[in-house]
Image 1 (cartoon, rainbow, N blue to C red):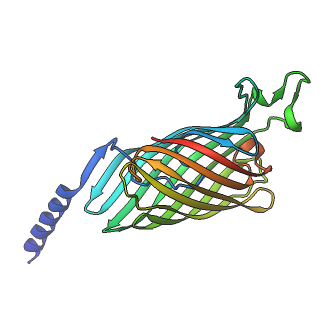
Image 2: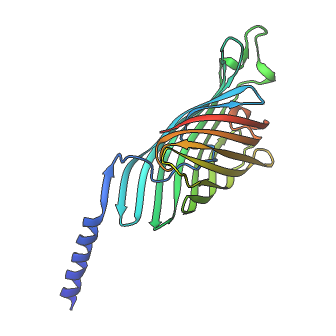
Image 3: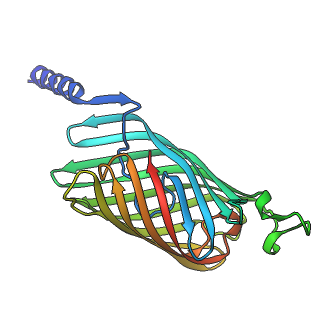
Length: 273
């Protein structure tokens, strides 16, 4: 009896191993970026309509290693982002005021069952922020708007569980900041949101919308809201190009302005890499 059991166990293990697919540098992303969440891979720019500023995003996420078994996929990857604040001036000049850098590692786990899927994305990352020469008034030899360069740096873990039905997805976000400068910034960030890609009559483009709410302590607890809607050219869950209109209210997304309240609409153009 024990020999038969051992033989069956070996056969089962060999069978499972044969069905597991492993791949280095797979195409696409296991976990599709959340449409309204700010810390996502983007390559494009947003024109802040009411502020006459521009945010330039240059970033990418890549799955490096993929393990797939039946309807379950596990991936490990990396993130490298920059998001830059520019001021619009005459003669097509755009002085750079601030730049933030993010780099980190991520893991994605997803289970697909017919038209439903669920899973999570885990990320470990570092962000540093800097004022640059566009924030300096050369005529008066002072920093603009009474600002001064300061150290802003944080390292954090984040977990984003999600659940999708068809093309509608809802998620929550839990972030733990284990090291941060300045010290008055709280350790926790709490998020929830959703995105939806609407059924299209053509394979050329898809309409989409998303919302994200973030609660963080930057001296006191405050909420930030991002509402976005637009059109994506290309497959809704693959690489493509998107044009979107967004509304933001809350503390600035730039670390050097972490305690600055902002409220603006923006028109965005983005390459989904």
